[in-house]
Image 1: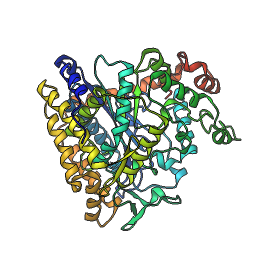
Image 2: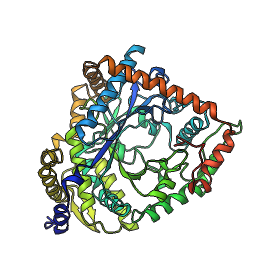
Image 3: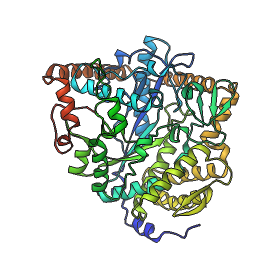
Image 4: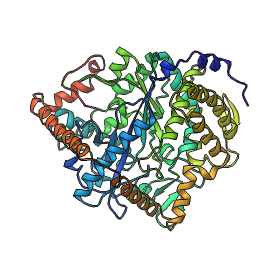
Length: 520
């Protein structure tokens, strides 16, 4: 065990109630629309939900079949969850009026059709709408459409008076310790066989039609999930905003041979991708956490970071918890608050290329076999048992949680850390272990388990009170979003090819181009 961190104690003593009151969080939650038989729904995004290009809370991610629900920014976990729940209620009511589709509660997808049958997200005829669809076409060519149907929940977090330098220190520590989140909250130890059909995968059969690894925590975050061998060559450093931006700048501007072979357009003139660079746009970079900044109309995210610095971080490694109707609960959010604050307040030495590689190896090891008894990771070039390292992290987190609860930071943070400690001591309580038990209870079937839990979540959310005023507000938002999309389409004057070239140009990473709103 490591000794108490006196630096952390000093930082905590300087943390005021007023500053903690400014802590903010928001959620972005992806879910596939599925048919009652557990197969992917191939229907278009329901018109009654409004325009996915412009709706503030209801959009799509990769596919027309993949709904993304976005909350506002909130001062408490409870308020954030209340809004996420309300958005779910609105979506379920509109879906119920159109048929019997459900939202899939698991991160790894339901029964999938052939790769080319999975529908891309469509965003209308405007240049920005076409760019979003072409970007998704490019993702399909580069990584396959099945991989893009994986869903998760992103946690956006900020604290007042944090500099870009401090946020990057947080990010480095987060990445070092991210294995703990995969272990405690990973909930994707198994997949439907259709997800890996025709691929080399190394998984083991689980009943009829499912594949798994017996000690896996999060296949979503492992080598079968969101990964890119091409991007592995980046070795992006998080030692400074300048270094991070320079790494992404090169990936966004230098042609990559394999993607040059695909070409921007096919012989028939249809678009294959936005560009031939290693990354088409910033969002293509896969990472467990991102530095973020709200962008202005027509601005590239990298330009926003360079000009105005980091505003918040986006945590991207959380699986949907299929046992929770909306995918996440307040205790998990409080754990994340403590985890992030601990990462911010503890010393964060610069990373190295060797450490970046070790972090990746630890992540893949915990994702694929995290519950294996006696599992050993690497820390600073030396072996260390996962459980010992995890208890070290939780010891530091307890000091943070105690301070949060003492200063009235929402309460129950010590209980959240205690929950993590209990899961460490009783692996059967881990969501990944519970998913395998749930599959056993449903005939050793991944799809059977997912269908049953998705139906239960649907019924529970539809049974919650939903007032006429709330329904009217969501109807109005949907109508307003359609009107806004139409206005964007009507205002377009530039040919799409000219728009595309300007958006992906080297120059556009350095200044705003007003006709590029929503292009990511």
